[in-house]
Each structure stands twice: as structure tokens, then as C-alpha cells.
Length: 404
Image 1 (spheres, rainbow, N blue to C red):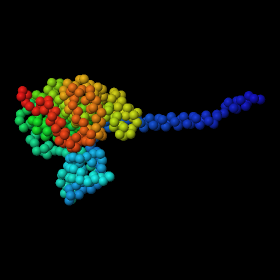
Image 2 (cartoon, rainbow, N blue to C red; image 1 turned 90 degrees about the vertical axis):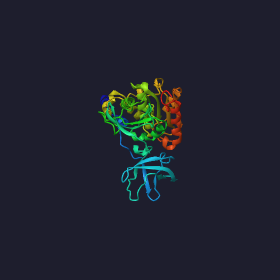
Image 3 (spheres, helix red, strand yellow; image 1 turned 90 degrees about the horizontal axis):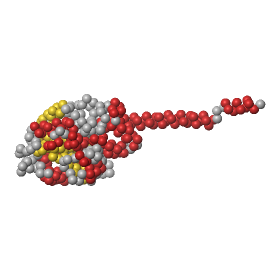
């Protein structure tokens, strides 16, 4: 009599068991969707790291007063800085030079225009605030010539600003990520004053030099070869001592050239403005700014830095983060370094620069700013920036001809 009841009871599913099964299925689907989404975000971040990008607007212009020759724009950590800056625009004019802040409220700042804007000018509100200031070599009012550097990537355009008197000291200027060689024009006058020839160079994938096969950045791991070709060009044209000056990613490129160049024997020092000294520090910082979980930034770095990620990222080769970490390779440095970095950089944190200075106090001098932001040290305090370079160059004896 009991057998049928046991069979009936054993053959029926308990309601809670079904709910648990459904819940587990939904949880698995949700987890799978979350991991897929995180993977997609990581891939997007990885591709962004190595892909050259056009200039991105970072501020809105609220009004241009042609009568007063002022521009009112959004107030940001950059636009409220004192000093002289550049503003990339679209419309009647594509570039404006702006001067000091002449007014401010909680949301906007008003700056003096140093480029004349006519009353009938039509400018789009979206603009890019920049530390460039000079955007053409003629604006320096110094003699210069154009040149083509025969680099591994192909002919790379350059400008040569010869010293007033013949000199065997040259400085090779290397611009940063997402910019062109005009970024470095700010440094030419101080080196010219010191009797040093400036070679302002381009490199692969920067929009002026040839494109590589993949068209992606290697964050300094390959770009240094184009800078090495520039050093060779300088040697052929009379340089016997070469200073490398790098800005932002250009700092990473200059450091790799210093560590790997076959012409290392003529390099006598480096001047680095807001440099990338360790890419992992920068990428982790950028991920925190974007409020991305560590899992995302970690996976993105693995994609960029591993052979298995190359086809996904379309980078052509894994980025050698260990080789690009100059803090870890500090004992390999052989030449004096002047580091110029602001603790409020906002893009490339100064942490790695401080660590490098601490690791090699015998070679590295660090000039720390506190309110200057990324690659805007010249703009914020031109006198201090220029004097730091002057005193360093003179301290190395590079303002005098060899043998004097």
C-alpha cells in the first residue's frame, strides 16, 4: 500500500528545487553577461591605448567678445591656470592664442585673446585647450630650415633651428602622444639662447611621419628608432653631443633611445617634461580616473602586453611593459636627466618620475611643480621652467663649445 506513495513522492520535484535551478541559470547568464561586458570594456581600453587619435575637444567656448578681444569658456583645472595657452577651434579660425585670466565665476573663465578675432568670425563652441602656444615655426622669429630624417619608418619631417654660432651640441625635441612636433616649439628659444641647435622631429604614426604597417603606437618600444635616426642626422650635420628632450610619451621614447641607441656615445643628457617613465603607472591612473574596476584595467594591460592579445588589439606586437619601465631599469641609466613634472599633472602622474629621481639621485635632478598640469609647465611659469633648463645645461657644460 505504501509503495505507490513512495513512488509518487520520489518522482515529484520540490518547488524550491526548481526555483534554485532557475536562479542558478539566471545567475550564470548574468555573470556571463557581466564578464562579456567587462571584456568588451577592457578591449576598448586596450585599443585606445595604442591607437593614435585625432585632437579631442575638451572645453566649450561660451562667448567670444570681438570688441574686448576676450573669450569666455568653461572653467576647468586647465582653463583656470595662469599663463599663455593655445585653443584649437573650428570655423573661421582653427587656432587661437590666449593669455591671462581677466574674469571668472563658478562655472566659466574669461581670458584675453592674443590672436585677433574679427567681429564677423564664426567659431564652433567645442574647442581643445592646449599648452602648445606656438603652432608654426615662423612664430618663433628664429632662422630655421626643414629637413627629412631617413628613419626606419620612412622619411620623417623635421625642423632645424641652428645655433647662432657653430656648435657641436644639438637637442632633439620629441613630442608626445596625440600631438605633433609643434608641441615642442616652446623649448627652442631657451636652447637657442644657450647656443644649442634644435632638431624638432616627427615619428611614425604621429600624423606627419609615415604610418607603420599597423598604424598603432608602441608607446616608445619602436618609435625610439625614428629618434635614433634623428640623432644620426644630427651627427652627420656636425653634432658631437646630443641632448634628448621628450614631452609626455616623447619622454618614454627619449628614454628608450637613451637606453638602446647605437649612438648612445654621443648622448650627453635628457630633459623630460611631464614624461611617461612607467606605462603601467599611467594606465592604472587613467583607469581610476574613468572609475573602471581594477579587473578591467588589468585585463586591458594583459591584452596590450601579451602575444595572445595582439590580434584582438590589432597592435602588431605585444607592448613590452617591463622594458618600458625605466624605474625598474634605473641602474642602466648612464646620462644626466632633468625631470620637469607637476604633481597635479592630471594625465601622467608624477609618481614614477619621483621614484626615478629617488632611485638615481646621482644622475637625476627633479624640478617639481605643484600647479601646472600636463605639459603646461612652460605656460604656467615660463621663467622658472626656462631657468631650470638653463641651470641644468650650464651645469653640464653644454653651453660651451667642446674644449673651452
